[in-house]
Amino acid sequence: MRISKDEVTPKLQKIQKEIYLDFQELCKKHDIPFFVSGGTAIGTIRHKGFIPWDDDIDVCMLRNDYNKAIYYIRKELSDKYTVYDCKSKDGYVMAFSRLCRNGTKMQEDADTDSNFTTGIFIDMFAYDKTTSDSRLFKRQIRRTWLIARLIVLSKYKRPKFPNNLKGIKLKIARIICVFIHYILKILHLNKRVLYKMYLKEATKYNDSQYELYTDFSYSHPEKVLCTYDMIFPLKEMPFEDITVQMLNNADKYLTSQYGDYMKIPPIEKRITHNPGYVDFGDGNIYRKES
Image 1 (cartoon, rainbow, N blue to C red):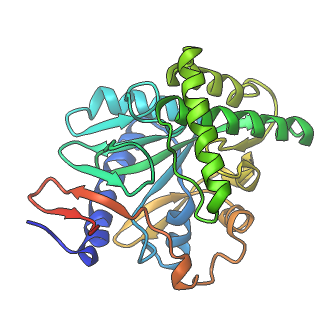
Image 2 (cartoon, rainbow, N blue to C red):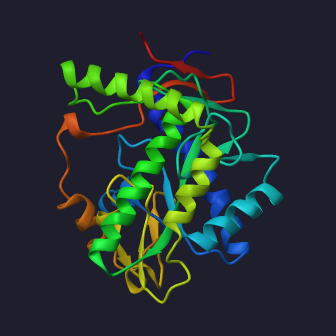
């Protein structure tokens, strides 16, 4: 049965909450600490649940815990879930991973040359250590940013561009991306090779004594920079009819990213994943009108 646009977000939220509960149960079983972030963290504090127009759940872990979570998901939950990451899924090119429910399909409405679909998902992000030397930190950001973009271009020659990029600048950017795409193919720099390069750069300080952590897959890693005591000890907070794990100093963390995150944004800034197609796996299908 085809469903309307107004029905999509509530149905996605319901399934994503179920995915989260299964993930949380697995993490508690194996003593894997994690916390919600982004719009999920804002929703927890500001709305005591989902932001009404949000259609996503984000969870974060330190790198070792992230690897451990993926290992146990694949070992114990493979009948119900699939982890999409650069290592395992050919068309997937993000530096973070997604926990996708089997039997469902979702395609984001992205301006790319891809028809790649996942299942309905929650996003999983890894936090790595970084240096307190601002010069070296900025260099690490530049390098991970560049490699992450090359990962996308190694697979797709028409990535999604910012909405404010238009006219001749957009045309030039598209030409450059096509050129880079074919150069990477000639050099045999596929996404798995590039992802190894990304991990090497992102994790280079993980064995150090530094107590600074960030997510290099985020668009602005400097805005999600955390000290250990900003993250731990974790707090349990109500989220609709369940509870979620929140980092210790959520206010400082969210203010760095969003400023006054308690202020309701205007309608034009209420961002969703805006899926182009969703198969909920129960006979209900949504397809965006062209």
